[in-house]
Every structure is written in C-alpha cells, then in structure tokens.
Amino acid sequence: RRCWPTSAPRSRSCSKPALKLKFLLSTLCGVLAALALFGIMGLTLVDVTGRKVLSTSVTGSLEVTELLLVVVIFAGLPLVSLQSEHVVFDSLDPLIPAWLRRVQQSLVDLCCAAALLGVAWLMWTKGSQMIEYGDLTAQLKLPLGPFVWVMSVLCAVTAFVHLLLIVQPAEAHHAGTT
Image (cartoon, rainbow, N blue to C red):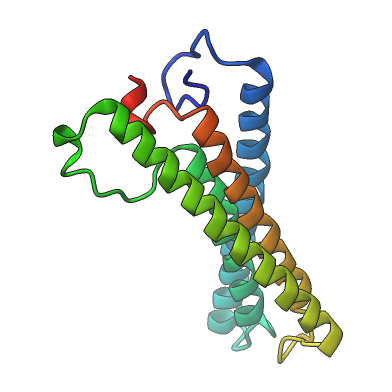
C-alpha cells in the first residue's frame, strides 16, 4: 500500500493518480520554495553589493526577504510531510508491535491534519482581517493579507498530505506497513 516513495521504486499497489498527485504537489511546492529562495539570494546579492560598492542598499530589502522567507518555510511544509522527514521520537518503536505503530502513526497524521486545518482557517481569517484593515509593510507598503492567505493555503495543503498519508503511507512513513 505504499504510494509515496522517497527513493525506492514504485510499489505495485500504488495508484497512478496518487503518484501524479505527489509529483504535482512536490513540483509546485518545490518550485515555489526554490523561486522564493532564489529571490532572497538575488536580493541579498544586490543589496550587499550595493552597500559595499555604491554605499546604498535596496529599499525594503528586509521586508521582501522576510516575506519570501515565509514562502520558503510554508512551501517546505508539504514537502517535508510528503517525504516523511519530520523529527520523530522513535526510541520505543522496537518495543511496539508493527500494527500498533501503524495505528499510532495514523492517529498522529489525523491530529496533524486537524491542527494544520485549524491553523489554516485561523490564518485565512487573519489574512482577511488584514486586507480589510489595510495592513501594509512599513517601507514598501505591500499588502500583508495575501501572504497570510498563501500561508493558510500551504497549511491546508500540508493537512491534505497528512490525510493522504493515513490512506497511502510514504515508503519510510509507517513502520507497520513494511
């Protein structure tokens, strides 16, 4: 029933739609994170070069860096979940039967999904409030609400990933499925 391989060959029981979905999520979130990280890198290069060579910095570079860093972090959440790369406490796993570990991991995924959906809802509400109030960054006057909405959507995507992991665990995810 493994459908989210990390580096192992595709399992026969894995459906093509699930693999396509994993590929789509990985690609979209990976490209989004990579573009934001590249933007940070380019902006930092131009800003530091401008300060050293021209004695002037890029206006609002700190604000843009902070906003792009938010995108990197939240775009990375679904990727970490897809690859089952979260920090785990597994010292007691050898003492627990495989079927119980599978149940435990399913419950953990369910709790993660519920928490992430709750956070996504709160962020969506906060982003709407920020747009309603006209919250802007200090220097560049960029609206903050859309960035909070992006954070909300990426939290919801991560919650969806955890729900998928209950049904079709990652290769290295559920010890009870090996």
